[in-house]
Image (tube, helix red, strand yellow):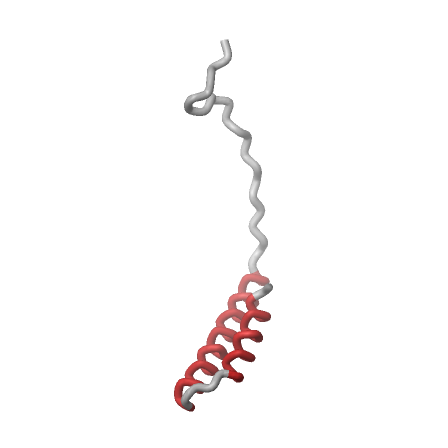
Length: 70
């Protein structure tokens, strides 16, 4: 599940919750702030080049406790 879908589900839960008015407004505003931060972060990450990892060769040294070849 991506973060936007999770926020949509959270928003639905907040809308259905029975809370005092002030707490309800605070929760809805918090969801809006999270949505803005996630979408801005996603837009910023699209502009960056993807990071590629290179595989490194395994070392040939024996592990601790293993028998050594003669």
